[in-house]
Amino acid sequence: MSRRSSGGRAARHALRAAPPAVNPAAPGQIGGQYKPLSNSDLEAIYDTALRLLAELGMGEVPDRLTQIFLAKGATQDEGCRILFPRALIEDCVGQAAKTFPLHGRDPSRTIEVGGSAVHFGTGGAAVQTLDLQTGLYRPSTLRDLHDFTRLQDTLTNVSWFTRCCVATDVPDTLDLDVNTVFALLQNTTKPTATSFTVAENVAPIVHMLDIAAGGEGAFSKRPFIKAHISPVISPMRYGEDAVDVTFACIENNIPISCITAAQSGATAPATLAGFLAQSLAETLGSLIMVNCIQPGYPMVFSNWPLVIDLRTGAFAGGGGEIAVLNAASAQLSNWLGLPSGVASSMTDAKAIDAQYGVEKGMTALAAGLAGGNLIYESSGMTASLLGASFEAFILDDEMHSAIYRSLRGIEVTEENLGFDAIVDAVMGEGHFLGSTQTMQAMERDYVYPALADREQPRTWAEEGAQTAWDRAKAKAQSVLETHNPQYLSTAQLDQIRAQFNIIPV
Image 1 (tube, rainbow, N blue to C red):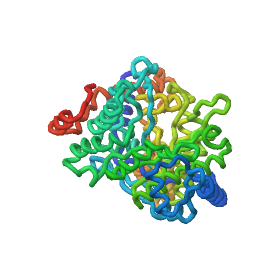
Image 2 (cartoon, rainbow, N blue to C red; image 1 turned 120 degrees about the horizontal axis):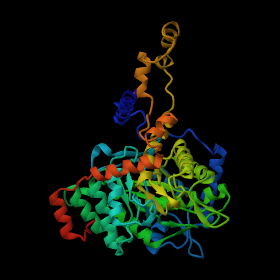
Image 3 (tube, rainbow, N blue to C red; image 1 turned 180 degrees about the vertical axis):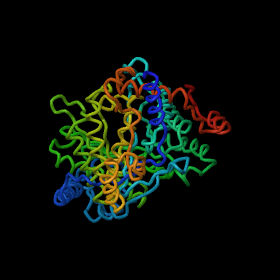
Protein backbone atom coordinates (compact mmCIF):
# COMPACT_ATOMS: atom_id res chain seq x y z
CA MET A 1 0.00 0.00 0.00
CA SER A 2 2.79 2.36 0.93
CA ARG A 3 4.65 1.69 -2.34
CA ARG A 4 1.52 2.32 -4.40
CA SER A 5 0.88 5.59 -2.58
CA SER A 6 4.47 6.70 -2.99
CA GLY A 7 4.42 5.83 -6.66
CA GLY A 8 1.21 7.77 -7.13
CA ARG A 9 2.70 10.84 -5.49
CA ALA A 10 5.80 10.57 -7.65
CA ALA A 11 3.66 10.41 -10.77
CA ARG A 12 1.65 13.43 -9.64
CA HIS A 13 4.85 15.38 -8.96
CA ALA A 14 6.20 14.51 -12.41
CA LEU A 15 2.93 15.62 -14.00
CA ARG A 16 3.07 18.95 -12.17
CA ALA A 17 6.65 19.53 -13.28
CA ALA A 18 5.82 19.02 -16.95
CA PRO A 19 5.13 22.27 -18.79
CA PRO A 20 1.65 22.63 -20.29
CA ALA A 21 1.29 22.06 -24.01
CA VAL A 22 -0.36 25.49 -24.24
CA ASN A 23 0.15 28.22 -21.65
CA PRO A 24 -3.41 28.98 -20.47
CA ALA A 25 -2.32 32.25 -18.84
CA ALA A 26 0.48 33.80 -20.88
CA PRO A 27 1.76 37.33 -20.22
CA GLY A 28 0.07 40.06 -22.21
CA GLN A 29 -3.50 39.30 -21.15
CA ILE A 30 -6.00 42.14 -21.52
CA GLY A 31 -6.72 44.36 -18.52
CA GLY A 32 -9.06 47.26 -17.88
CA GLN A 33 -11.93 45.48 -16.14
CA TYR A 34 -11.41 47.38 -12.86
CA LYS A 35 -12.24 51.08 -13.11
CA PRO A 36 -12.04 52.83 -9.73
CA LEU A 37 -12.72 56.22 -11.36
CA SER A 38 -15.91 57.29 -13.13
CA ASN A 39 -15.75 59.30 -16.35
CA SER A 40 -16.50 62.49 -14.45
CA ASP A 41 -13.72 61.60 -11.98
CA LEU A 42 -11.26 61.19 -14.84
CA GLU A 43 -12.23 64.53 -16.33
CA ALA A 44 -11.98 66.34 -12.98
CA ILE A 45 -8.53 64.92 -12.19
CA TYR A 46 -7.27 65.66 -15.71
CA ASP A 47 -8.61 69.23 -15.67
CA THR A 48 -6.99 69.88 -12.29
CA ALA A 49 -3.68 68.49 -13.55
CA LEU A 50 -3.76 70.78 -16.59
CA ARG A 51 -4.68 73.73 -14.41
CA LEU A 52 -1.70 73.00 -12.15
CA LEU A 53 0.62 72.98 -15.15
CA ALA A 54 -0.91 76.15 -16.60
CA GLU A 55 -1.17 78.26 -13.42
CA LEU A 56 1.46 76.83 -11.04
CA GLY A 57 3.78 75.31 -13.62
CA MET A 58 7.06 73.53 -13.08
CA GLY A 59 9.99 74.86 -11.09
CA GLU A 60 13.78 74.52 -11.30
CA VAL A 61 13.76 74.04 -15.07
CA PRO A 62 17.30 73.75 -16.48
CA ASP A 63 18.23 76.50 -18.95
CA ARG A 64 18.55 74.14 -21.90
CA LEU A 65 15.06 72.80 -21.28
CA THR A 66 13.62 76.26 -20.60
CA GLN A 67 14.63 77.43 -24.06
CA ILE A 68 12.97 74.42 -25.68
CA PHE A 69 9.75 74.98 -23.74
CA LEU A 70 9.59 78.68 -24.55
CA ALA A 71 10.13 77.96 -28.23
CA LYS A 72 7.17 75.55 -28.12
CA GLY A 73 4.77 78.10 -26.61
CA ALA A 74 5.25 77.82 -22.84
CA THR A 75 5.73 80.97 -20.76
CA GLN A 76 7.83 81.90 -17.75
CA ASP A 77 6.46 83.69 -14.69
CA GLU A 78 8.25 86.12 -12.39
CA GLY A 79 9.47 83.27 -10.21
CA CYS A 80 11.03 81.56 -13.26
CA ARG A 81 8.45 78.76 -13.18
CA ILE A 82 7.50 77.44 -16.62
CA LEU A 83 3.77 77.58 -17.36
CA PHE A 84 2.26 75.26 -19.98
CA PRO A 85 -0.90 76.26 -21.87
CA ARG A 86 -3.53 73.56 -22.25
CA ALA A 87 -3.09 73.46 -26.02
CA LEU A 88 0.63 72.67 -25.69
CA ILE A 89 -0.05 69.87 -23.20
CA GLU A 90 -2.73 68.31 -25.35
CA ASP A 91 -0.53 68.58 -28.45
CA CYS A 92 2.17 66.62 -26.60
CA VAL A 93 -0.33 63.98 -25.48
CA GLY A 94 -1.52 63.67 -29.07
CA GLN A 95 2.01 63.37 -30.44
CA ALA A 96 3.22 60.91 -27.82
CA ALA A 97 4.04 57.33 -28.73
CA LYS A 98 1.02 55.14 -28.01
CA THR A 99 2.63 51.74 -28.55
CA PHE A 100 6.18 50.59 -29.17
CA PRO A 101 8.24 47.42 -28.77
CA LEU A 102 10.50 46.62 -25.86
CA HIS A 103 13.01 44.48 -27.70
CA GLY A 104 14.68 41.44 -26.26
CA ARG A 105 18.08 40.47 -27.58
CA ASP A 106 16.23 37.26 -28.36
CA PRO A 107 13.50 38.57 -30.70
CA SER A 108 11.04 35.94 -29.43
CA ARG A 109 11.10 37.68 -26.04
CA THR A 110 10.17 41.13 -27.38
CA ILE A 111 6.96 42.60 -25.94
CA GLU A 112 4.70 45.38 -27.20
CA VAL A 113 4.00 48.18 -24.75
CA GLY A 114 0.67 49.99 -24.80
CA GLY A 115 -2.90 49.25 -25.70
CA SER A 116 -4.65 46.95 -23.23
CA ALA A 117 -1.98 44.28 -22.72
CA VAL A 118 -0.68 43.70 -19.18
CA HIS A 119 2.88 42.67 -18.39
CA PHE A 120 4.42 42.10 -14.98
CA GLY A 121 8.10 42.90 -14.57
CA THR A 122 10.62 44.21 -12.12
CA GLY A 123 12.06 47.40 -10.73
CA GLY A 124 13.45 48.61 -7.49
CA ALA A 125 16.81 49.45 -6.06
CA ALA A 126 17.00 47.16 -3.05
CA VAL A 127 20.05 47.80 -0.93
CA GLN A 128 19.48 44.57 1.00
CA THR A 129 19.03 40.97 -0.10
CA LEU A 130 17.25 38.22 1.82
CA ASP A 131 20.02 35.66 2.01
CA LEU A 132 19.02 32.21 0.70
CA GLN A 133 21.06 30.43 3.31
CA THR A 134 20.48 32.41 6.50
CA GLY A 135 17.00 33.85 5.84
CA LEU A 136 18.29 37.21 7.08
CA TYR A 137 18.93 40.49 5.28
CA ARG A 138 22.42 41.64 4.30
CA PRO A 139 23.76 44.32 1.93
CA SER A 140 23.07 43.58 -1.74
CA THR A 141 26.11 42.77 -3.88
CA LEU A 142 27.08 42.58 -7.53
CA ARG A 143 26.98 38.78 -7.18
CA ASP A 144 23.34 39.09 -6.09
CA LEU A 145 22.53 41.13 -9.17
CA HIS A 146 24.03 38.47 -11.45
CA ASP A 147 22.13 35.77 -9.55
CA PHE A 148 18.80 37.61 -9.66
CA THR A 149 19.24 38.19 -13.39
CA ARG A 150 19.88 34.57 -14.26
CA LEU A 151 17.12 33.38 -11.90
CA GLN A 152 14.45 35.53 -13.53
CA ASP A 153 15.73 34.49 -16.97
CA THR A 154 13.92 31.19 -16.33
CA LEU A 155 10.63 32.74 -15.14
CA THR A 156 7.83 32.98 -17.70
CA ASN A 157 5.93 35.78 -16.03
CA VAL A 158 8.77 38.29 -15.73
CA SER A 159 8.23 40.01 -19.07
CA TRP A 160 11.19 42.35 -18.70
CA PHE A 161 13.95 42.71 -16.14
CA THR A 162 15.06 45.90 -14.47
CA ARG A 163 17.88 45.51 -12.01
CA CYS A 164 16.12 44.83 -8.71
CA CYS A 165 19.02 45.52 -6.37
CA VAL A 166 21.93 47.91 -6.10
CA ALA A 167 25.42 46.48 -5.87
CA THR A 168 26.44 48.22 -2.68
CA ASP A 169 29.94 46.73 -2.98
CA VAL A 170 30.66 48.84 -6.10
CA PRO A 171 31.21 52.42 -4.87
CA ASP A 172 32.33 54.08 -8.13
CA THR A 173 29.29 55.33 -10.05
CA LEU A 174 30.65 54.57 -13.53
CA ASP A 175 31.73 51.08 -12.45
CA LEU A 176 28.30 50.59 -10.88
CA ASP A 177 26.41 51.59 -14.03
CA VAL A 178 28.73 49.59 -16.31
CA ASN A 179 28.66 46.42 -14.22
CA THR A 180 24.89 46.62 -13.76
CA VAL A 181 24.39 46.61 -17.53
CA PHE A 182 27.02 43.89 -17.96
CA ALA A 183 25.07 41.66 -15.55
CA LEU A 184 21.99 42.12 -17.74
CA LEU A 185 23.88 41.36 -20.95
CA GLN A 186 25.56 38.25 -19.60
CA ASN A 187 22.56 36.65 -17.91
CA THR A 188 19.38 37.31 -19.89
CA THR A 189 18.06 37.96 -23.40
CA LYS A 190 14.77 39.43 -22.22
CA PRO A 191 14.00 43.14 -22.58
CA THR A 192 15.91 44.86 -19.81
CA ALA A 193 16.11 48.23 -18.08
CA THR A 194 18.64 50.11 -16.02
CA SER A 195 19.36 53.58 -14.71
CA PHE A 196 22.23 55.96 -15.29
CA THR A 197 23.71 57.84 -12.35
CA VAL A 198 24.84 60.75 -14.55
CA ALA A 199 24.49 61.64 -18.22
CA GLU A 200 28.21 61.13 -18.85
CA ASN A 201 27.79 57.42 -18.22
CA VAL A 202 25.34 56.93 -21.10
CA ALA A 203 27.74 57.09 -24.08
CA PRO A 204 30.30 54.55 -22.82
CA ILE A 205 27.56 52.12 -21.87
CA VAL A 206 25.98 52.49 -25.32
CA HIS A 207 29.38 51.50 -26.73
CA MET A 208 29.25 48.33 -24.61
CA LEU A 209 25.70 47.69 -25.82
CA ASP A 210 26.90 48.07 -29.42
CA ILE A 211 29.46 45.32 -28.79
CA ALA A 212 26.66 43.03 -27.56
CA ALA A 213 24.42 44.05 -30.49
CA GLY A 214 27.00 43.32 -33.17
CA GLY A 215 28.83 46.53 -34.00
CA GLU A 216 28.92 50.30 -33.86
CA GLY A 217 25.44 51.81 -34.09
CA ALA A 218 23.71 48.41 -33.91
CA PHE A 219 22.10 48.99 -30.53
CA SER A 220 20.29 52.20 -31.50
CA LYS A 221 18.71 50.44 -34.48
CA ARG A 222 17.07 47.89 -32.18
CA PRO A 223 17.42 48.99 -28.55
CA PHE A 224 16.98 46.11 -26.11
CA ILE A 225 17.43 48.07 -22.91
CA LYS A 226 15.42 51.02 -21.62
CA ALA A 227 16.27 53.65 -19.05
CA HIS A 228 14.45 54.42 -15.84
CA ILE A 229 14.60 58.15 -15.18
CA SER A 230 12.86 60.43 -12.69
CA PRO A 231 13.19 63.86 -14.32
CA VAL A 232 10.41 65.33 -12.18
CA ILE A 233 10.84 65.66 -8.44
CA SER A 234 7.70 66.06 -6.37
CA PRO A 235 6.27 68.54 -5.78
CA MET A 236 6.24 70.04 -9.30
CA ARG A 237 9.89 70.64 -10.18
CA TYR A 238 12.54 69.17 -12.45
CA GLY A 239 15.78 67.51 -11.38
CA GLU A 240 18.69 68.75 -13.48
CA ASP A 241 20.80 65.56 -13.39
CA ALA A 242 17.86 63.40 -14.48
CA VAL A 243 16.94 65.88 -17.21
CA ASP A 244 20.51 65.63 -18.51
CA VAL A 245 20.21 61.83 -18.52
CA THR A 246 16.97 62.16 -20.50
CA PHE A 247 18.71 64.23 -23.20
CA ALA A 248 21.54 61.68 -23.38
CA CYS A 249 19.13 58.76 -23.71
CA ILE A 250 17.17 60.46 -26.48
CA GLU A 251 20.42 61.21 -28.32
CA ASN A 252 21.23 57.49 -28.20
CA ASN A 253 17.71 56.17 -28.96
CA ILE A 254 17.25 54.49 -25.58
CA PRO A 255 13.53 54.07 -24.75
CA ILE A 256 12.68 55.60 -21.39
CA SER A 257 10.35 55.16 -18.48
CA CYS A 258 9.83 58.59 -16.94
CA ILE A 259 8.86 57.78 -13.38
CA THR A 260 6.95 60.00 -10.99
CA ALA A 261 7.00 58.67 -7.44
CA ALA A 262 5.19 61.16 -5.23
CA GLN A 263 4.34 60.15 -1.67
CA SER A 264 0.94 60.84 -0.14
CA GLY A 265 0.93 63.39 2.65
CA ALA A 266 4.62 64.16 2.12
CA THR A 267 5.43 65.28 -1.42
CA ALA A 268 1.81 65.14 -2.62
CA PRO A 269 -1.62 65.63 -1.03
CA ALA A 270 -2.87 63.06 1.46
CA THR A 271 -6.28 63.07 -0.22
CA LEU A 272 -6.31 60.41 -2.92
CA ALA A 273 -8.00 62.62 -5.53
CA GLY A 274 -5.58 65.49 -4.91
CA PHE A 275 -2.68 63.07 -5.03
CA LEU A 276 -3.80 61.76 -8.43
CA ALA A 277 -4.18 65.28 -9.82
CA GLN A 278 -0.68 66.35 -8.78
CA SER A 279 1.04 63.11 -9.81
CA LEU A 280 -0.72 63.21 -13.18
CA ALA A 281 0.47 66.80 -13.67
CA GLU A 282 4.03 65.78 -12.80
CA THR A 283 4.07 62.78 -15.14
CA LEU A 284 2.64 65.02 -17.87
CA GLY A 285 5.57 67.32 -17.08
CA SER A 286 7.89 64.48 -18.14
CA LEU A 287 5.79 63.73 -21.20
CA ILE A 288 5.87 67.39 -22.30
CA MET A 289 9.64 67.48 -21.86
CA VAL A 290 10.23 64.34 -23.93
CA ASN A 291 7.85 65.32 -26.73
CA CYS A 292 9.13 68.89 -26.93
CA ILE A 293 12.63 67.46 -27.36
CA GLN A 294 11.54 64.78 -29.86
CA PRO A 295 7.85 64.26 -30.67
CA GLY A 296 6.68 60.65 -30.53
CA TYR A 297 9.74 59.39 -28.67
CA PRO A 298 9.12 55.98 -26.96
CA MET A 299 8.29 56.77 -23.33
CA VAL A 300 6.42 54.75 -20.74
CA PHE A 301 4.07 57.07 -18.83
CA SER A 302 5.14 55.81 -15.43
CA ASN A 303 2.92 57.43 -12.82
CA TRP A 304 3.65 55.45 -9.64
CA PRO A 305 1.61 56.63 -6.64
CA LEU A 306 3.39 55.82 -3.40
CA VAL A 307 1.89 55.90 0.08
CA ILE A 308 3.36 56.73 3.46
CA ASP A 309 2.03 55.67 6.84
CA LEU A 310 0.92 59.06 8.15
CA ARG A 311 1.46 57.93 11.73
CA THR A 312 5.20 57.43 11.23
CA GLY A 313 6.17 58.90 7.86
CA ALA A 314 7.47 55.50 6.72
CA PHE A 315 6.86 54.30 3.15
CA ALA A 316 4.03 51.74 3.03
CA GLY A 317 4.24 49.42 0.03
CA GLY A 318 1.17 47.33 0.83
CA GLY A 319 -2.42 48.25 1.58
CA GLY A 320 -5.73 49.25 0.05
CA GLU A 321 -4.68 52.83 -0.62
CA ILE A 322 -1.66 51.95 -2.74
CA ALA A 323 -3.70 49.29 -4.54
CA VAL A 324 -6.46 51.67 -5.58
CA LEU A 325 -4.08 54.55 -6.36
CA ASN A 326 -1.98 52.51 -8.78
CA ALA A 327 -5.12 51.06 -10.35
CA ALA A 328 -6.49 54.59 -10.79
CA SER A 329 -3.18 55.71 -12.26
CA ALA A 330 -3.33 52.91 -14.83
CA GLN A 331 -6.91 53.86 -15.66
CA LEU A 332 -5.96 57.52 -16.14
CA SER A 333 -2.99 56.69 -18.36
CA ASN A 334 -5.00 54.29 -20.48
CA TRP A 335 -7.83 56.83 -20.74
CA LEU A 336 -5.29 59.24 -22.24
CA GLY A 337 -4.11 56.51 -24.60
CA LEU A 338 -0.60 56.49 -23.16
CA PRO A 339 1.57 53.42 -22.43
CA SER A 340 1.08 53.05 -18.70
CA GLY A 341 3.56 52.11 -16.03
CA VAL A 342 2.43 51.50 -12.45
CA ALA A 343 3.74 49.55 -9.49
CA SER A 344 2.54 46.67 -7.33
CA SER A 345 3.73 43.98 -4.93
CA MET A 346 5.77 46.44 -2.86
CA THR A 347 5.02 44.53 0.30
CA ASP A 348 6.16 45.83 3.68
CA ALA A 349 6.66 42.23 4.85
CA LYS A 350 10.22 41.21 5.65
CA ALA A 351 9.62 37.46 5.42
CA ILE A 352 7.65 35.25 3.05
CA ASP A 353 4.61 35.16 5.32
CA ALA A 354 0.87 35.89 5.42
CA GLN A 355 1.39 39.66 5.23
CA TYR A 356 3.58 39.12 2.17
CA GLY A 357 0.89 37.10 0.41
CA VAL A 358 -1.99 39.44 1.20
CA GLU A 359 -0.21 42.63 0.20
CA LYS A 360 1.32 41.24 -2.96
CA GLY A 361 -1.81 39.48 -4.18
CA MET A 362 -4.10 42.44 -3.54
CA THR A 363 -1.96 45.13 -5.15
CA ALA A 364 -0.86 43.01 -8.13
CA LEU A 365 -4.39 41.90 -8.97
CA ALA A 366 -5.71 45.47 -8.74
CA ALA A 367 -2.98 46.79 -11.05
CA GLY A 368 -3.55 43.98 -13.54
CA LEU A 369 -7.33 44.29 -13.58
CA ALA A 370 -6.99 48.06 -14.08
CA GLY A 371 -4.89 47.45 -17.18
CA GLY A 372 -1.42 48.66 -16.24
CA ASN A 373 0.66 47.97 -19.35
CA LEU A 374 3.92 47.56 -17.45
CA ILE A 375 3.58 46.71 -13.76
CA TYR A 376 6.86 47.44 -12.05
CA GLU A 377 8.24 46.18 -8.72
CA SER A 378 5.95 43.17 -9.09
CA SER A 379 8.60 40.47 -8.73
CA GLY A 380 10.96 39.75 -5.88
CA MET A 381 10.61 42.88 -3.77
CA THR A 382 10.17 42.85 0.01
CA ALA A 383 10.59 45.15 3.02
CA SER A 384 9.01 48.26 1.48
CA LEU A 385 11.40 48.05 -1.51
CA LEU A 386 14.47 47.94 0.73
CA GLY A 387 14.86 44.21 0.16
CA ALA A 388 14.87 41.67 -2.66
CA SER A 389 14.37 37.92 -2.29
CA PHE A 390 15.18 34.94 -4.49
CA GLU A 391 12.28 32.98 -2.97
CA ALA A 392 9.97 35.91 -3.68
CA PHE A 393 10.83 35.81 -7.39
CA ILE A 394 9.70 32.19 -7.53
CA LEU A 395 6.48 32.76 -5.59
CA ASP A 396 5.59 35.96 -7.43
CA ASP A 397 5.97 34.23 -10.78
CA GLU A 398 3.31 31.73 -9.75
CA MET A 399 1.07 34.51 -8.39
CA HIS A 400 1.24 36.26 -11.76
CA SER A 401 0.09 33.10 -13.53
CA ALA A 402 -3.08 33.21 -11.44
CA ILE A 403 -3.56 36.92 -12.17
CA TYR A 404 -3.08 36.43 -15.90
CA ARG A 405 -5.67 33.65 -15.73
CA SER A 406 -8.08 36.03 -13.99
CA LEU A 407 -7.49 38.64 -16.68
CA ARG A 408 -8.11 36.11 -19.44
CA GLY A 409 -11.66 35.75 -18.15
CA ILE A 410 -14.27 33.33 -19.46
CA GLU A 411 -14.73 32.49 -23.12
CA VAL A 412 -18.45 31.96 -23.75
CA THR A 413 -18.94 29.96 -26.96
CA GLU A 414 -21.42 27.35 -28.09
CA GLU A 415 -18.73 24.70 -27.64
CA ASN A 416 -17.79 25.89 -24.14
CA LEU A 417 -21.40 26.12 -23.02
CA GLY A 418 -21.51 22.43 -23.85
CA PHE A 419 -25.22 21.67 -23.96
CA ASP A 420 -24.63 18.27 -25.55
CA ALA A 421 -21.80 17.43 -23.12
CA ILE A 422 -24.08 18.15 -20.16
CA VAL A 423 -26.84 15.97 -21.62
CA ASP A 424 -24.39 13.13 -22.33
CA ALA A 425 -23.00 13.24 -18.77
CA VAL A 426 -26.38 13.34 -17.08
CA MET A 427 -27.85 10.57 -19.21
CA GLY A 428 -24.67 8.49 -19.25
CA GLU A 429 -21.88 8.18 -16.63
CA GLY A 430 -23.34 10.82 -14.34
CA HIS A 431 -20.08 12.81 -14.21
CA PHE A 432 -17.70 14.71 -16.48
CA LEU A 433 -14.43 13.02 -15.49
CA GLY A 434 -12.54 11.83 -18.54
CA SER A 435 -14.98 13.28 -21.04
CA THR A 436 -13.66 14.76 -24.28
CA GLN A 437 -14.73 18.25 -23.25
CA THR A 438 -13.03 17.93 -19.85
CA MET A 439 -9.79 16.64 -21.35
CA GLN A 440 -9.70 19.46 -23.90
CA ALA A 441 -10.32 22.07 -21.21
CA MET A 442 -7.84 20.57 -18.78
CA GLU A 443 -4.73 22.26 -20.21
CA ARG A 444 -6.40 24.95 -22.28
CA ASP A 445 -8.31 26.63 -19.46
CA TYR A 446 -6.62 25.77 -16.16
CA VAL A 447 -3.38 26.84 -14.48
CA TYR A 448 -1.78 24.22 -12.26
CA PRO A 449 0.54 25.77 -9.68
CA ALA A 450 3.93 24.14 -9.26
CA LEU A 451 4.50 25.44 -5.73
CA ALA A 452 1.11 25.90 -4.10
CA ASP A 453 0.14 22.82 -2.08
CA ARG A 454 -3.18 21.17 -2.95
CA GLU A 455 -2.64 17.87 -1.16
CA GLN A 456 -4.61 16.55 1.81
CA PRO A 457 -3.18 17.46 5.24
CA ARG A 458 -1.98 13.89 5.83
CA THR A 459 -0.09 13.78 2.53
CA TRP A 460 1.38 17.23 3.20
CA ALA A 461 2.65 16.04 6.58
CA GLU A 462 4.08 12.82 5.14
CA GLU A 463 6.01 14.82 2.54
CA GLY A 464 7.71 17.00 5.12
CA ALA A 465 5.09 19.63 5.97
CA GLN A 466 6.87 22.15 3.78
CA THR A 467 5.81 25.79 3.62
CA ALA A 468 5.62 27.82 0.42
CA TRP A 469 8.87 29.47 1.47
CA ASP A 470 10.54 26.04 1.76
CA ARG A 471 9.44 25.05 -1.71
CA ALA A 472 10.39 28.40 -3.25
CA LYS A 473 13.80 28.28 -1.59
CA ALA A 474 14.47 24.81 -2.99
CA LYS A 475 13.39 25.91 -6.46
CA ALA A 476 15.55 29.06 -6.37
CA GLN A 477 18.57 27.06 -5.23
CA SER A 478 18.03 24.53 -7.99
CA VAL A 479 17.84 27.22 -10.68
CA LEU A 480 20.95 28.99 -9.41
CA GLU A 481 22.86 25.70 -9.35
CA THR A 482 21.91 24.72 -12.89
CA HIS A 483 21.11 27.83 -14.97
CA ASN A 484 24.35 29.55 -15.89
CA PRO A 485 23.72 31.30 -19.21
CA GLN A 486 26.53 32.88 -21.18
CA TYR A 487 24.68 35.18 -23.54
CA LEU A 488 27.86 37.01 -24.58
CA SER A 489 30.31 35.27 -26.87
CA THR A 490 33.96 34.85 -25.94
CA ALA A 491 34.90 37.53 -28.46
CA GLN A 492 32.32 39.94 -27.03
CA LEU A 493 33.49 39.24 -23.48
CA ASP A 494 37.11 39.85 -24.44
CA GLN A 495 36.24 43.11 -26.17
CA ILE A 496 34.13 44.38 -23.26
CA ARG A 497 36.69 43.39 -20.63
CA ALA A 498 39.46 45.10 -22.59
CA GLN A 499 37.57 48.41 -22.56
CA PHE A 500 35.64 48.41 -19.26
CA ASN A 501 36.36 47.61 -15.63
CA ILE A 502 34.26 44.46 -15.39
CA ILE A 503 34.36 43.26 -11.81
CA PRO A 504 34.55 39.47 -11.38
CA VAL A 505 31.84 37.82 -9.27
